[in-house]
Length: 156
Image (spheres, rainbow, N blue to C red):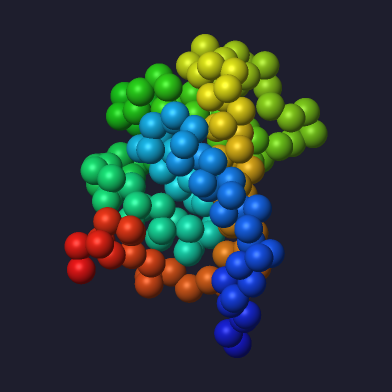
């Protein structure tokens, strides 16, 4: 397959997605939780670049290999994740896979029990943002393997 365009050459077009990422960093949501959500959505969508990026970011933030390996089957490995993380992962899946009937009442109730209203809006923004990035990565076949987390870049 031929190489596709590098959408990063158009930062002004991507500005809204970068702004969402900046807002998310200051949302008050725990970074490990955010990384799990970004990783899970990227797995659902099949975005190799984003899976690579968010596993590296999660590891750099102290996430364990075991939890990263099991996030795609988090329901079966529920004891590995907190109630809040399980609620976030259920929310991320429901919003990403929006079907004919949207997010179920059960998933909504689980999320509102674990997150404040403002946190839930931030969580939803995270899911919307990564779905957007996934569409860029998949469409233009961003190549995984070259991304280095900010902490690794600072250390080198």
